[in-house]
Length: 66
Image 1 (tube, rainbow, N blue to C red):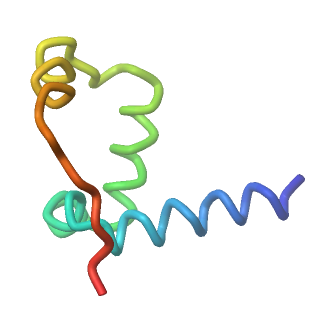
Image 2 (cartoon, one colour; image 1 turned 30 degrees about the vertical axis):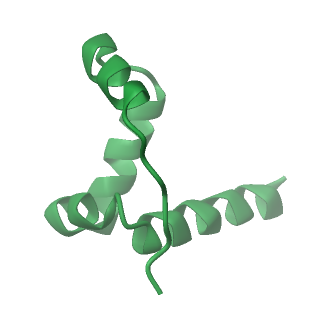
């Protein structure tokens, strides 16, 4: 079980560090702060229906920074 949790954590770290859309947020909060932010967001505490609708209507492409 711990092995899978480590793989998930590694995946989130790679996404956070390399995602073009998240780079600014990681720089703003730091890596640990971003992980706390991500965890809080996944719990639904920071989700805003208006912002989600606006984002859903945009054409956004996720690209990894090389």
